[in-house]
Image 1 (cartoon, rainbow, N blue to C red):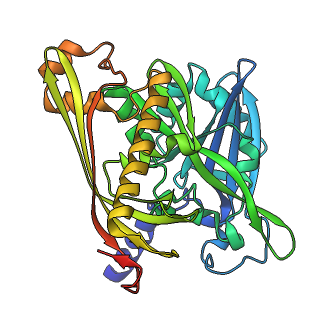
Image 2 (tube, helix red, strand yellow; image 1 turned 180 degrees about the vertical axis):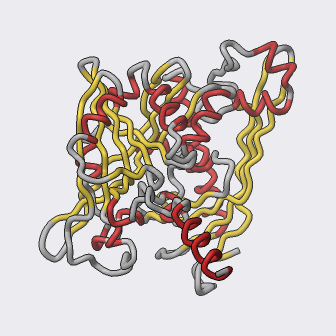
Length: 384
């Protein structure tokens, strides 16, 4: 009798357990990878990229199914209204936890809504702080439909994982939403958002192919959009990153018409603000290692160092001058002063920024630590 009572109690207790009845099965959800935001005619237009995760497990091999993602679009007076319009046409639950990147159109950057857009995604309880931020002047829909080379998974694309390709060339430093808000809240209250374009230089065995590329930056401040710095004009940014960076410079050799491309790895950056007579100047010291992969003719390491220094200086000065044209502290000199001498910063700052001009960089010292000739020494052509 005692055993029966225990059995009855145990069975009754199981009825009180909630179990996992309210948990959605993975195959019954849609996963958002990227979102694009446009703003025109006083309305938000949102683009939602839903991906097929069946391709993720075999991302190292071509996917026989060409449809890796579908793009939904909707308009609304607010972003939330546009998203809810899309929800009405979706037959499964939408999961936001895998959202990896956000793209803002030029019009969205120009509107006063750009900063609130970033803030909205940070406030959403399902999204993460590590979402990558981009801007573009091209069609957001076309960018979201670009498939990575050899049809790899979209989770391995440049936009989803910009740090992977940055290991080879760190032309434009990626920025996530967390750093965006920090940059807007701290001097100089400006951020550089990578500019995305579509590169059409690829070809498959059957047809031409497209890939995304980072070709510049859009400057956003807490007061609005400042403008773009693109292409070669933005190249100086990679040498002024706080982190180690890799890139290349090409220059013409002194003897003949031959050109040489040298791989550079920046191993140190030091920016020192010097305050004197209520003015601040900045001394910049950068150290590189250089690697030569191929050349013809005779060339000395001194000639290589000389040309590297000239090219890097030109890159840094060009980007700085482009920033001055837009009233942008492109290298965040205001923050360097703020962190070293806050009293001086308070005396000089205006709306969070210190005044800058052509002469604000008082010293630009570039040092090439090593010149590596590559796999072989070529003693007959590289002379120390």
